[in-house]
Length: 228
Length: 412
Image 1 (cartoon, each protein chain N blue to C red):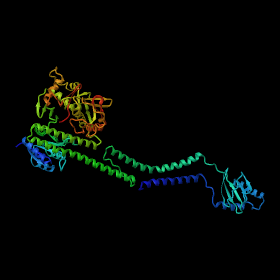
Image 2 (image 1 turned 135 degrees about the vertical axis):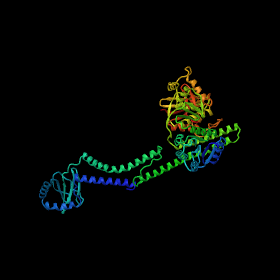
Image 3 (image 1 turned 90 degrees about the horizontal axis):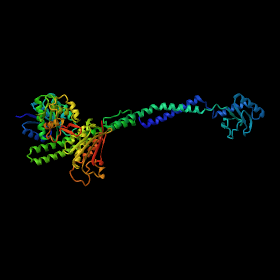
Image 4 (image 1 turned 30 degrees about the horizontal axis):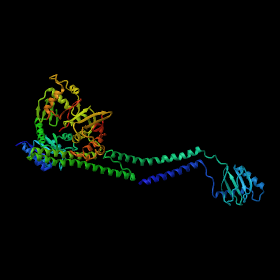
């Protein structure tokens, strides 16, 4: 028997489809059609993860999230609707481990579910920067894409971390050099641009068309802040 | 006091009473009333005892008048029944006229005089030397004192009335500024109090409607997207050929985008203020959005603005998407600073939009007449306009630089 997932979702047809899809991936899905039943099911039998819809007929998903979190540390993935006034931060503050806006890609649901389960098994890691599928682990100085560690040198990791810590801001080459000057340079003849190409090869789907580490001509680089 | 009109009316009446009282008091202590009415006849009876009878010699009458004038210190003149002068003392006095036996006031060049009828038909005209007439300064002081008393008396009443109106005005202003919880204290039971009550009711209703609208928007977003999610999942579960699947996924994305834009337009219409305000690197945001297309370049320099990063991202995305959809590559995005304004330009190499169409470019669902080609949601540019306005900026079509949209926003 695979890992048990409690799905609290009022749309029974959607729940059925999610059950079937996740079932094919080896999960066992238990469905609750409202918050009260979800809480009761959660109290009765142990589950490995919870997928929780933000909008339920009898309760606010955030409330349910808080109540579950008060009595267990099961990982919670919240389903929201894109453009919901609810900020992602609010959901995460209530104790959700991740959130996924509807309409989601089924594969993304699977990836996120596996990610929260993996993180839960690995124990809490507060020192991790997370941007979409990328995890930058400051503790182990490791970068992971979809959970898989990517080969980067110490210098390249420092460069990526400097960029990610200033996500959403254009960083000039000089500013980046300043931030990582304490790092051991492996090869003096390589400019920052070469290291950026290596980083892209490690984390971008298509390094030729980077979406995460972007060049701004005449100015420097920007680490994209967008989560998706 | 219950009614406003009554308050105003009573204030005026009270002011008038105050004027009368003040004037009366001042008059009482400042001047004396001259005798009038029947007193003239009574005085005539007494005077008849002091002057010789009508048959007496003119000399005797003259002596009596002289004596009397000296004693009372006044100008006197005695006239016969037919207004013939019989005797006089002091400055000359005019005859009393032919008004019969009645006594009364006479107007003379040297001040007011009185005519007193004697029982035998003669009449004595007397003029008491006038006291000094009040000077202009005295008059001004007299009126000034009245004005001061009225002003001091009316002030607290008027202040109470306008004070409540001012509080009401402040309430209306804060509601207008977007504070939907603004209410005013209901004081008294008059029209102003009823107005305050009506305002509170109206404000409560507006707050309720806006809340309901927000709730509807939040629910609509969720309710519309749940079936979209089902379609997407169904597509994954069904054995669909990959080409057809990709096409259907694009359709779903398009529908999702449309839902998103309609809801965003409504949400921006419903609220005046930005939910989030933080420093945003506009250049970095433009670079992120440009990275979505192969033929899009960003140049300029780092400029920071203050606002909602999600909305600002949407603004840039819509402009870039618009250039991609309706213009010709490459797309150039420049971010610059001019004085205290951030200027973001998105230009492409497509044909310039005709002048006749520019006025309506930012209207919802507007499509340039005669243009074929791909169709967007029709809300993209309208949203750009709403977002820039909400951030205290504006957007315009700038044909000087080819086909170009220029956004200005207050820079940090």
